[in-house]
Image 1: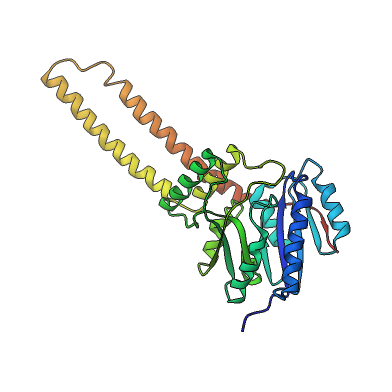
Image 2 (image 1 turned 90 degrees about the horizontal axis):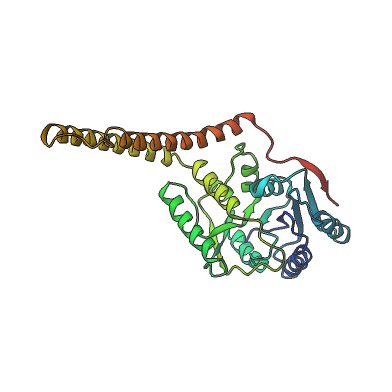
Length: 315
């Protein structure tokens, strides 16, 4: 017998999305109302998380809240990053299951029905996975494909082309909310909690309105978090690299001695420039890498909140 889904919450992180939010709300309502008619769910809530927007996003959300009793708005005091906004939404979301989806309509809400089908077949985790990246720019496509491959080689468990479009059962949401770590890469954190999951494939659509909030800086920051927060492989790689450079230095020293005692004077740069460049560059690289790990320990030790609530608009 399929398990029932009485209340479904859909968490929608928002940061400066005033142009697309009316379209998003209308489309989500159409899909969710259809799920009620098809008796896949009994009721739903759309939980918008205003992640420190500086445009008129809050005014738009105020209007949606005033006209739709199934809408809830979580207003954060500032921008806590994309991972922080999803964490806030999952913390406040109610119901038997929670779906997280971007506000830009690039992830199709129509796939929520298929996710619920897997939930009814006893999957607590259902991942939305893109079929391809044809809608991305050439740079983003190249960066993303290389990044997923690099994560795998570093020992970080992720699902290729899965972003943050997923369904989580209440029990899994509660386990996630109990996690205390501050440096978050949710798409990898989820797989640490549950490896029994279903996949829903979809084609990602172009953004309907507004502009993307993931610039080069955001992508690089997310990439570093994903690697440093879930893998010690870079430290091991540095150890191996250090051994290689040390061995190479011994060979270089042997070459210099060979030149000195067989063919005459050693080139002037050999005894000064090479050691400086090799060891200086390697030390800077190692210190920078260790600094990334120490920086994250520093953040974890302070135990600052993942988010700070300004107001919870709830019917």
